[in-house]
Length: 349
Image (cartoon, rainbow, N blue to C red):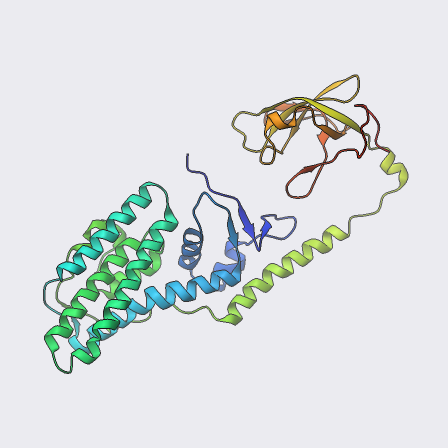
């Protein structure tokens, strides 16, 4: 079973009622922004087993510093120079060292994908893009072409091959941009129809059209606007919560709360959040279903004092009858208890 970590938004627990939520269409896609950017961020931010903290500021930084400056920069400068100086992909054979670098990357990505380590796979792909940038910068074909055209052509031949390998490997993460790049490499079909192990199959000598940048930078104004939508939603949610109507003492008197002691606790099969508790509330044992499994092990709850809402209408939760509610505070379900020891069944006034 592949299970992901929790999702947070701006270091707060994902919560629609509190406004910590991002609506993919309304907040992002409907503004014409790239779905590929979101896919990249979600997969590359952290291991899928750990918590994901979504932040528009970090999103912008990751896209600009990694996708635009590393991957996009290498692809564009390679294809631009190939088109400008050679009219496309020059003839020649790929250097064995370049093939070996691509094969090493392929093997690593393959292993990490099999282990569902998506972040590791993306990081490896981006490392190959960084290698490509270093390779073309070090060999400087724009200088080399003035003295040795054949050597400059070899650098570009190798760089175009790296571009092809990056396109095939990044396609599951950024399918739209990968298809754009595939077309700019002169391929008329779908990149998704090709196996990733074709990364070392040479790009044939061919004419190429003038390339266009694959990725556009996210400007500070855009990020600020996206974040402003989130902050307005949080503010509106807080305002609504502040508007909870006042109640009279007569209304409050309808609520019955008593102290209790947990005498048994067990997990509910197929549920990751629910526990079935048996609670002594003074001369009566209540079965209560509580959504605190993420914060407490059943064993540690036995013997604990709790506060129980006792006149809540019975309900079936996950097929198990519940007769009451355990009271807890905060996002981490801190159980409410009396400051001084009292007998189970003592009424809360």
